[in-house]
Length: 397
Image 1 (tube, helix red, strand yellow):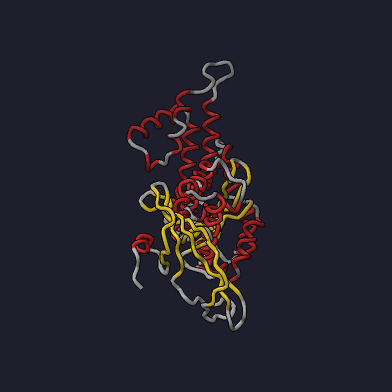
Image 2: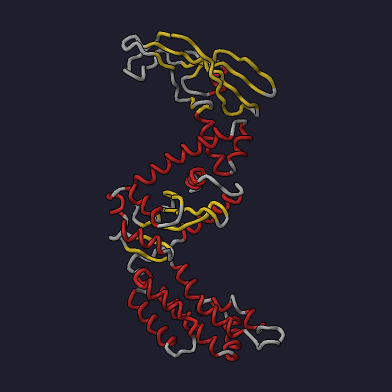
């Protein structure tokens, strides 16, 4: 069949232009019809060309030369002679009140801007765009969850500031978000793992999480065969809390003196967090002068350096040697502020030391995803609907 000019301009497969209703500078309205003469019956699959009646369906399309385009689809209702059923013809180019290509554009725009901004940009309703985003996110989630996951990353984030937390699960090999489950308790993680099935869970070899006891309970119950590892960032933050407590005690001055703290010790608070191998010559000289005046601060800094050695070691045996050196420093009794660090290590020693055996995994990918989720949350001024937040989060990666 010979194409007319408007068919080439619309470029929709198996759609022919019946006529142009409005051709104004501010908008374009075109009447179209399906070029499929005998669509199949959805009940029995028999081709049918007997028309019962026709109805006009208004479908929004992409802009042409900056003009909004509205298609008036002359949609037929057909009668299937073998089964005597009536049905409305369908078309792959149309998805409800928008064309398939506009639906794809709306979802793509919603990844870069708010749903409301995407709706205003194309002149459609917020509910329509949000429904497309949720539906597309569901397809993405199903595709990702069907594939096996060797390294599972688990963390939490909030959909409102300090309110309503969700558990974020990421495939550590690909960095893709698998799910965002409401709440951050053991039931949330256990429910997701149960829904994935035994076969999928058996494929998980390593699980990386923070020091959440709720997550630990769920992992032991559903992924007992996998190696559970604590994220290095969280562990180092626990270790650094001991040095911070020593530094705060050292910098205090007698009551009534001004200033109430030693300025030099206070100014070095960030420098003290640096590892010895990351210091320059001038920085090391500054710390040496500080340690000469405060020997207990030097002992705490050395102790933190040995705890860093747990991760700088080449293998588990090297990590245990660094731990022995820390124990020697702690046994002097001059840095009791590290007692909480010792208790924490005793409670999580298996998950900390297994870092070497598990291939040195990291929660870095999920932390980066959480940063994107927080940007999304601020842009939307917070979310109140878990489903909408999960749909937007799945499309970020």
